[in-house]
Image (tube, rainbow, N blue to C red; front, top):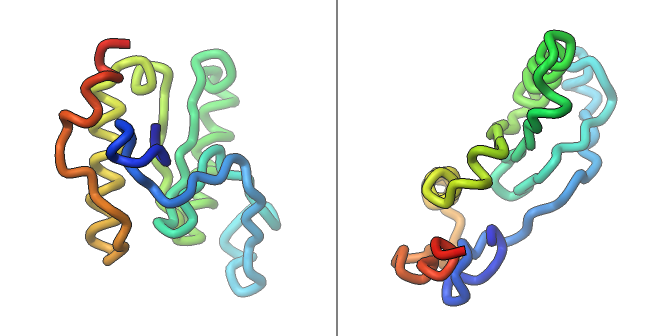
Amino acid sequence: MATLPCKKGGYGFKELELNPKVEVKAEQRHLTRADSYHPDGYLRYLMTDLEYESNEFHTSGTAIARDKARRNDIQALGIEVKDVTWEILSHIESLDLLFEQLLDKEHRMGQHSPKCVSHDNRAPFRRI
């Protein structure tokens, strides 16, 4: 839905990379715990990582601490981290809001991909 063209009910984002390797530059190495990271879903041109936080693997005390440290490292590289939970994915209004936030960032950054003008284009997804 994220990269699907607006006229087909999507949001028209340019490219969503799944688990790409993001290398830490030498001059930023002192800011992170690792030499590279693999964002769950990466909009490179927006410098935004969509991190899926499942209820199964991300809710123990240790997992929460690990995720927060990783998130801090990724943000130190200038990459915004957005949490994506099952609750967001399973409620179209919440998913709409997340994608609208990303469209707003795209617009503020001067990116020129077509902005979805009407929510009516996405009406079929609301009935699924």
